[in-house]
Length: 439
Image 1 (cartoon, rainbow, N blue to C red):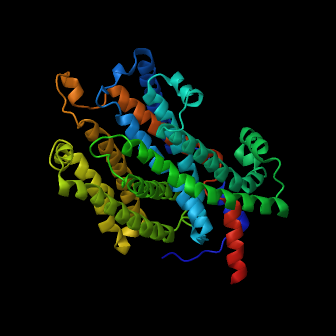
Image 2 (cartoon, rainbow, N blue to C red):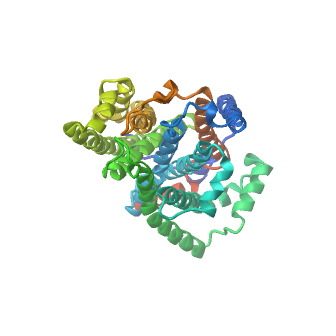
Image 3 (tube, rainbow, N blue to C red):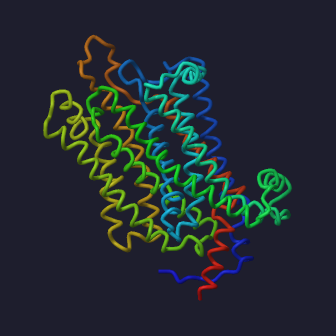
């Protein structure tokens, strides 16, 4: 375990100021921009020719787009875990991770909303949700909770950033004139008075209380989109808790990956320490155990009853064409992380980084197999339909749009890190001063 290092306010500020992109940063950004532009081109083709360019048909009307939507919603839930729950329970070591989790949450929820518009085929029809929405529809519930979660997440990202904006304004030579104008526009009213800090702290506490039920609602309502649709594999009252537990796991895995990347490439070893990986490792293994329990519960009960409607779906998942993907998601996304993380050596930075990637990749494939195999097993057998209706594999346009959305989310995080401190400067300085006074 790393020893606590006493740092001066000036050193903390210099260490945590935003840094310009180096060669690797420019290469990373260029790759993401190219992937995002390729996704935009594929979306242009979809707008021009219609959803026929995808491989979604009458039976599989939800494909990789909805899988990606559920994945983004899952990742976004980490903002409420790290920022809200940890803040309300006064977890002190959370400080270096709060802004990381919030920017992941905001970028993920933005692209979750965009991918839904992509899935609609005709984006202008999105307005019908507001003009002709029916409160009885879970789709409208989803729109409401996603919008609410987005605005609360933006405020939770912005309010703690205000003291840092004042600090950044003092380093005009290092940040540049353009960024200095941006900081002044966003935080010129912040004077750092005692009354402002009290108001800000109270507002953040209220938002932390509000975001927890909204965060639970967003994934519960998303699960209801499936559970209220009468299909084998979705006809379950377990779906709400099943989705929430999986979302917490996926989001925590994403934070672990981001922790390692920022720690290594921005040289933040003094701030994101091995202790943070140790703590997050314990959280990830606990969440993996909870999610594994819900997976056992989700599949064991219908497998034991083996109703005719569920038989074909379960057979395809366990030993059929979807079995490799199913067992990959279970092993890579849950079982292997549990086995590795129960050992102390597995909770070191590099093993945690690898496990974080495994959790995130496993989470994406898990969402895919929740959506597609079920749609290919309707209650009424497929008869007298074209062969293309009986299977589904995404077209290159779908893959390109999907990859473009992932690249877009990563671009949001990348540009945020270039413009703002990824670790809160003011909070870090305050905590360091409190430690020094207590010695």
